[in-house]
Image 1: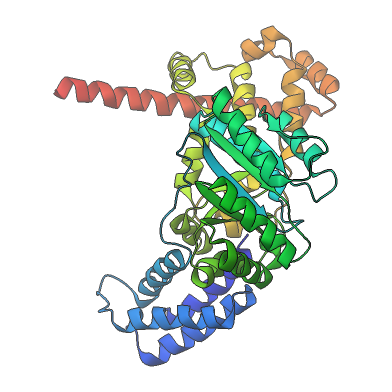
Image 2: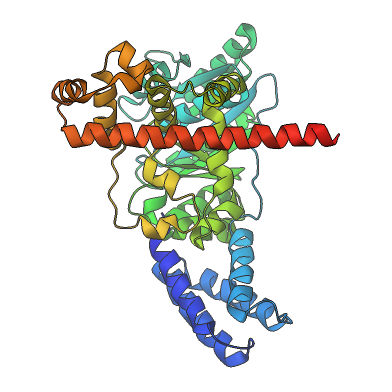
Length: 442
């Protein structure tokens, strides 16, 4: 989502390459380039200037150590300022209460209803809480039906009242239902408009005052850039919300909204939505986003995504199989399914340092990336999956024909599997040996 900005900043830092120290002249040239990069990313001139002024103040006040090059020092200063501009640290949502009440506001087309369902799914799956969705958008045709459809996808019930046009009455009844039926959280989807107007502001303000939410989130389309920032400011002046949600961050967005909102509105970004799937919702960590902008990757988020898909029991069983050389093609297939659940392959790879740049022009489709591999394994018999060593020439030809692939593709997969098995076995055995040595020393 920040590809162009990352490239521009990288070029800016090269101005300092080979310099022995930071001076007024080389810093001025670097900051001029950084300011242009921010403006191209749709950051407002005022915010870009303030950012560069703060970077300059820090840079000129630094005593550059002999072990640290000026270029490296500037990257560190810019990283810290980027994180600070976006909120410094992650700010959690407040869902404490009996029940906790989350009010979701925003304009039509911002992805507000979809986010409401995603948030309900996030709270239910990540925090293990019982969630009720409240359909209070009585303005947009089919909004209630859309929320019901999305709610059924994530197995979260939706409270609605047919024919009722009063969102306050619906919300209050939803909260009463949640209390009587033991729901921990109520997520209220509200009405929007095509633009900020008095009618919308009066309605959302009245609803806010009536239900006293523990958390109010404003949803904004990141693709609208500075318009998103101005809309957020207009809403906050009237509603005083707790945090911002940026949607469509996987689209053609330059990142200006993410970089500007906290500085202009003074409210933290709490979530970013990066796709249509109900799982495509990420908690916003400013420092991690700054890492990615500067090409440092986001290994922490990658590990967290992996941990969500793998439980300890599965990991222990897999470790035992690997140690005993019992890892089969069935296990290989299962690992592929787990990786696919983690999200878009290109996005996952981009969390590794330097990979965002390497994959910039590479088109990776999640649907087709593993298609041939899955087809080949599915064309094998159970015996062949469990004992790949029995797959001879005639079996390979049959598998290729059955999977609609070629013999070289089957050979390549089997070679890949064997290499993976050896590598994983070696890693596990090395870890076990290290543990045994530690036990002997104790």
